[in-house]
Length: 260
Length: 249
Image 1 (tube, rainbow over the protein chains, first blue to last red):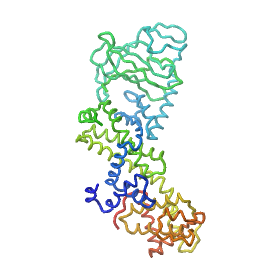
Image 2: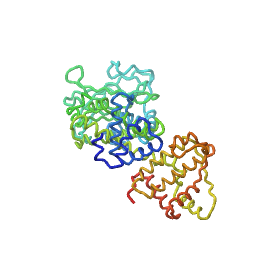
Image 3: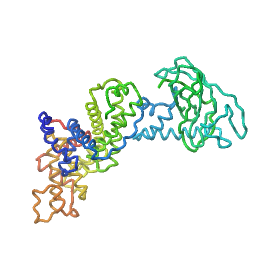
């Protein structure tokens, strides 16, 4: 530190030797205030102080804290501004926003969650009996609704292929929906899709739900090869919220595909 | 930090989420701990320090991500990068702490010594000329007094380039000390005592602090009229509110 001190402002030269004691709470009230006031107005001395703290942290003398999870920067702005748009509000981003240390972001996320929860309750068709766990559904195209086994042929849905900046490229990919999308009893949004269109492995499939009194919400999953050749599947299985469960009408589902 | 190399940095720069998450494990927890420790040097409790550090941390991480992805940060090895990241984080911590000071600390602890607003300043200073008695008598306990002493010293440091303001703060400090010394037993020599020692011997139950009396003390000590005092108090508040370093005067 002594070499650096030579080129410092005179006041910095007086303050910097006090920093180790300041770090250990070893200064009196007046000296503490002087160091505090100085650091608040001096970035170079604050950086020296930061270096001292880092040395202490790296030595293991203080227990490491768990850093708060910062939302993905790509999606951060959408937390505050998106009200629908091409993909709707990403459910995953909303979950991140709920954990944000920013009170405004958190409040906003809670408000959105409430709206979405209410909208979901209105649109879901309740299960007539507890459905089997999604991952174990083996029957193809059979969906039980309102107590009757309604044989339903597999539905087809087309997904718009989007560019990196989420604009439509004009291409579409056809998917087969093998089971009606649902929110399970334990509060998870679940959907399995299958396609035979090659060339999109690793793309993210976004499944947006249009809601009446709330912004559209989107769930996502990666497209991967199926066990049989020439087919690709995506399984979307995301936690939504407890207390809402039922089948999601297919007419409300919109698909998009993007490399993300 | 062994995995944190040029290749790793390039991946992160290219938007690789895995690299971003790995960064989390390698670096963020340490830097966040630094941020909490930094803020703890200024706040009275851990939870406040954590709250300020979390906000600073979020801002710093987002800023850093943006700069890395935009190619504004060059890779010159792990130590310079970590130092850069830490310095940006410290910068954000200082912003949060200044904001916190403006919103809480100054009003909590300095208000007995600077009036609540310009109008009150003016009214109080004018009342000195009219000879009206001041109703403002404030009682302080040991911890509050030490907090005020610390804050006054911080304010003096921030105003250090403005000699006239420093004079006012030194007068406030002197007045406060006089008030405390008055409560100490007469046989105790308080002259060389620091604040901690003085507060050990003082009878704080008898401590009375009168804002109007303090203004009069400042005026007499500095030989200035009420307008000059009003202007200096106003300037002092502006500096403390803006938490800028005062310019030379």
